Length: 149
Image 1 (cartoon, rainbow, N blue to C red):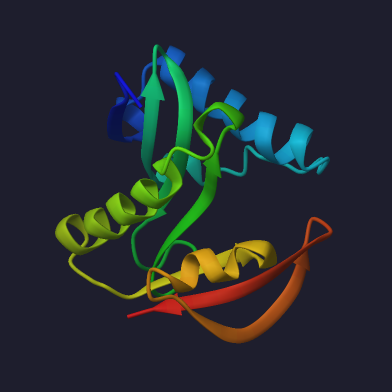
Image 2: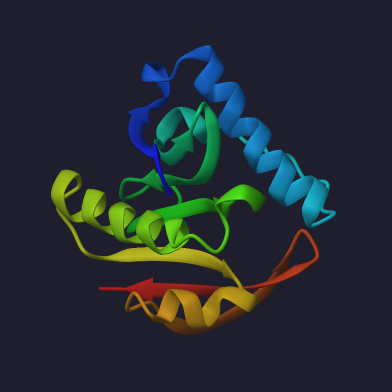
């Protein structure tokens, strides 16, 4: 994809238009596409690093990265999305690769725990994540806890 820009910022570094574009993308994917009303604004954005790819101000891929002890004892990645316009472009794979590099380079660890929607288990296993056997429904969507070290 041409003109894709990657960004990583702490919450207090986000501009209002960036925050709006991020929240819009998350709601478009999780609430509208997946028909899953849930409280997206969970008071964790303030504690996260926000990593995203954008083109002309539109978020195409996004995730939150958490240091150790915030969501899990280990670092974690969450709210992972590729928007409709970003799908099929490889941005989702790039997103996870960049997130893992940020965790290793900025946070100094390779231990990462995630809560993966079950249809993405194979995708995440391609990055070295293992199924921990902990399976649960989150917002009526089957999830599995995965770990990578």
